[in-house]
Length: 118
Length: 281
Image (cartoon, rainbow over all chains, first blue to last red; front, side, top):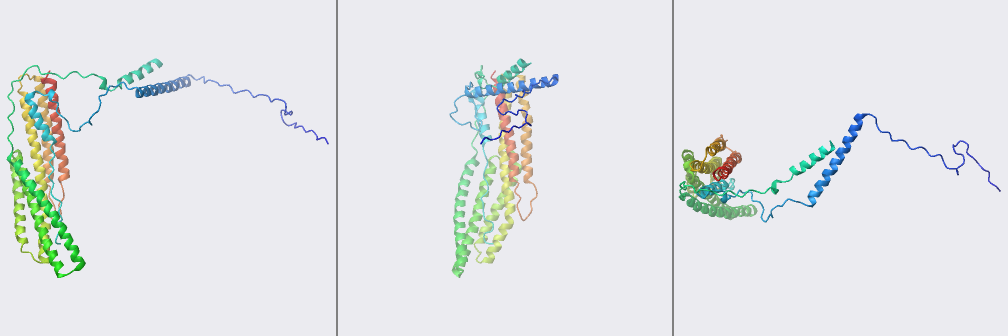
């Protein structure tokens, strides 16, 4: 028994096999206001500069050009006297002064129990 | 505009490069041998050796006190546990012993401190001497207390004896910390004296120029700051104390002393810079 054929007349394309009419893509319209154009240009430039900065930073980190001296010993917090820069006649005086400055006077009293016998 | 901004970024990169790349100029070599007479060699202060002796004696007494205190704590625990006449007598004897040892310990500490104070007492003789007299007074008092302690035989006497010490201890602490502060003031004043002497010696150098003399005179301003900080440290020791409890002024005084020491270090570096910059040109 043959099935009856139905056709939806409310649709724009009643034939489901026929291709639909392609909808036109919305056109990208550039703003015509010159202030907005300048603003957009500036934003683009900032992004480019940021990228350049990132690129140079990564380059510098990858291949350091700074010739640093090998750190064999940790830096002492106590200043040391560079004897070569001091005339010999003053060296002893400089030494004595720095020794006294670095002297830490700690002769604190003993911790005692004041409640003994109470 | 874009190329200008690129140029700015690159310029910033160059400026940001650490100065480690810059090669340092070789250290200057003195061209002429100065004829200034060298500073006299310092004579050894006899009080330094004396302090070392008293310090050793203090450490010995500290060890004895710690041993006696341990014994005293044990005897108290035993008496609390058994509560017999024997344990009570042991407790009394141990308490007596540790009270005497405690006085000995404090006395040896005070003696060592008094000797230490004499090492640089000439920087402020009057103040140092008055503190030394006070310390000596407490040394005598502790000796006297120990002679009394021998006759103490019961808990009531021990309590009276211990109470007497506890009441006097804030005054002893006041003297101790005042002595400590004054001792450090004396040391820093001594260092300042050495710096001033060096300043004068550099000023009399034959190759000295008027420009250098101006730099040297600027050090005087900083030396005034040292003196002011030391004065502040001393003033903190003179605040009135309550009779019952000691208010420790030492940490605040120590801050001022450290401040003075920082100024001394700055003067030291300034002198070093002056000598390198001007005298060795």
